[in-house]
Length: 228
Image (cartoon, rainbow, N blue to C red; front, side, top):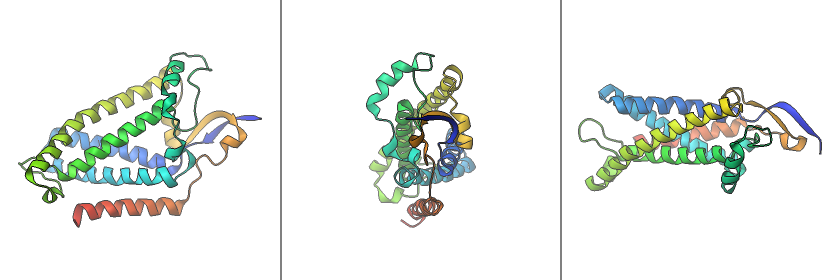
């Protein structure tokens, strides 16, 4: 089968906007959470609501989005060990560039989304007994609220670790492997040598579907925060 080596679009616009918006919001959330203060905690809560809405969108887009955005296209996790062994070499045959997420990247996405979802949802029920309480604290008793607040604080440490590991991995690929990850997440394009058929419509998506998913997820989050 013939192959091509082109600068192909592998990430759709919704995924790229999701990625960078989430990165900004997580940075704001971490900073305001560590700094404290009345105004900072207001921003902390707002960023948390937006993060929850984005996570809901990512779940939706993982089902109805472009090929590389779908969870069904994630590389099988059983390939993590052999991929990691290959990754240690610098030759072109090891740790080959993949369409979308490589096995370790897929694992990283799953871990980050899970930890962020736990952080965002527990924040809805958290109460620091001083100046800040989540919008859903009235739905649980004091004991459950204290437990969810404790999980929120403990999980934040795990989040810091995963974010740090994510940044280290990016620099590893960019510098050691010379496999560009940042630029493709900005312009959506990556140089790949693949069978022609595999290169078709990698990042094709429906604008109406994207707008509908965004509207639904942010609307649902608004309802959870303000109406329950």
